[in-house]
Structure formats: C-alpha cells, structure tokens
Image (cartoon, rainbow, N blue to C red; front, side):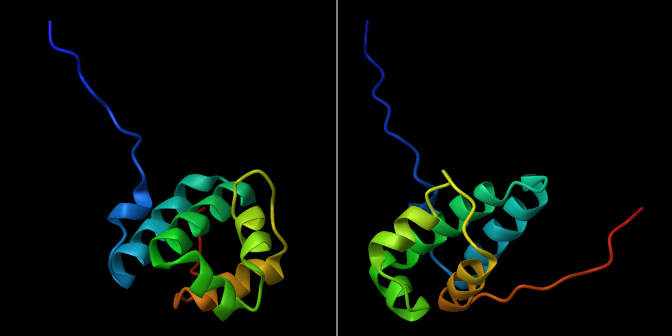
Length: 99
C-alpha cells in the first residue's frame, strides 16, 4: 500500500499579486463575523506573502511585534491594523450593509 504524503497548506504561498491579496482579505472580512483576531491572521498571511520584514519597516513596527500582532492569537489595535493595511498597499473601504 502506498503512503500518501501531505504538506501543510500555506495560503501565503498563493498570494502573488495585489489583486489576489485584496480578494483574500475581502473574503476573510466577509467570513470573520466580527472576529478581529481572524482578520489579523489574514493580514499576517498577506504580510508573509509580501515579506514580513519589509511590511514591518513600511508599517513602522518591529518585525517581532508585527508577528505577534498578526498571529491570530490576539486582537491588535486598530492603529496597528491601519498601519499594516497601508504597508501592504491595500485600502480599507466601507459600503452600506444589507438589512
């Protein structure tokens, strides 16, 4: 019997373009259901795809604090979220919800 070898899936390996990164974040925002740590983890996935060291520099944060903030284990401050979104070259926008 042959043995199936599996590897851990890493979404960061599949986020190559700014459009893919934006689409991934949009999908995560829709699925998050108000879970800020879930959104932080999604931003961490995008940051890893783009290069964590560069994102940390562009956001004005240390690499270590960026890893902690975007680990998904905590909810980072909104200020940190805005800095990271800007460093990733993404824009945050709002639209009217449906009641």
